[in-house]
Length: 259
Image 1 (tube, rainbow, N blue to C red):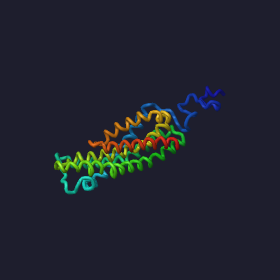
Image 2 (cartoon, rainbow, N blue to C red):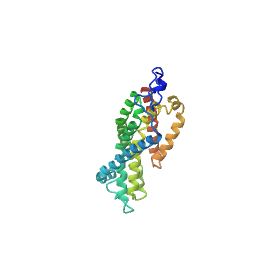
Image 3 (cartoon, rainbow, N blue to C red):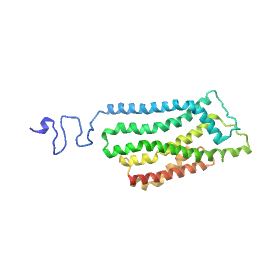
Image 4 (cartoon, rainbow, N blue to C red):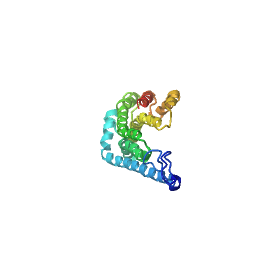
């Protein structure tokens, strides 16, 4: 009997009629409406937000000790914390908690993206996603460590404290912790760059040769981003950030060749 009349699979072409499925693509992949995909994406992003919220709740009881540690490490234990509003201390603690929350939420974001697109991925693409999840967490930790041990000392110990010869420093708790969390969270996010570049190339969103040819544009964007990320009037921290980003970009291109 003719396969086109019964809706069976034609072995020579792999096409089907009368069924809403793809047999010539990834095994198990089925066609679904746009609204179903949007609802699933919404639910998976909601899970990421829940992880972010839980991370803030878990870290909040320890945030006061963390703030004192940061103040002692980069400012001075002799310099009194200054709060200019009743809620400034609480908001500063929440901003510090956000760094921890991002550390556990970004890998969860990659995992939810993997679950969202998993049915349409080939086996080698699934293996790549599985490797990305722990690598994302490790890169975030490594990025925050660079910000903590390299950039923050440049900003506070060797730049800001030199103003003590001319003026008495009175640092706002919230403004100071905002600068700290911007550096730590920013570096953790920036160190996801190698994964994003490899992902974009693997998914066909950008060509490897295009990235190589457009290095000048990429470096210009890196410099602009470093100016936004590092609030340092001497531009020393911005230069450090830009150099690290340039190294990360070149490392990303190397990873693309290896994978």
